[in-house]
Length: 190
Image (cartoon, rainbow, N blue to C red; front, side):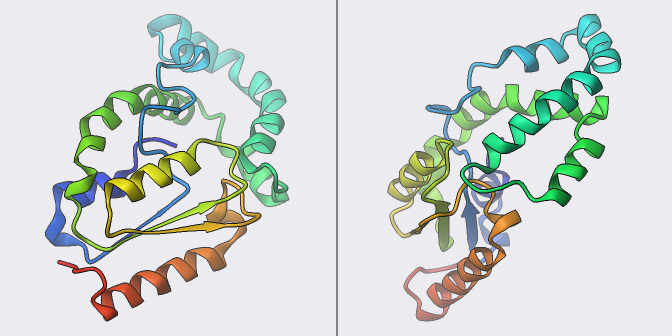
């Protein structure tokens, strides 16, 4: 749930896009679970101790913790078996894990730098969120819709946090909504 790159791109390069779809994203420091840093992120980014942890304890601990982490991320929906296999194969590579944790630690400051500018986005924006998402993305989606008044907010009943993995139809519906907004001229695009 790192700073939404799409929103930053829309702010920095407004003439390079015709619309934007945001799906279950984190966009603000407030209510972001690790906004001030979490213990694991701080540990793995420490100079010597972090490297030692990443190259010794990460894989055995990660494999034990990954099941609960995935269940929490997908809740209330089930974790697809193929996704779980991919996570166990890829998440716990030391360099990748450290880079992810560095992103988590940078999230708060990055959001502070751009969130006050979201209202400057003039491109059409569709914001899709799962109504059953256990993370603060519902709050963030509502705030973003308030900050970008010409946006379209769509809440999907029964969908959790992992919409692209579990509900590709929602992604396609969001694209259709964005396209219709552009065609109807309901939102002026660049």
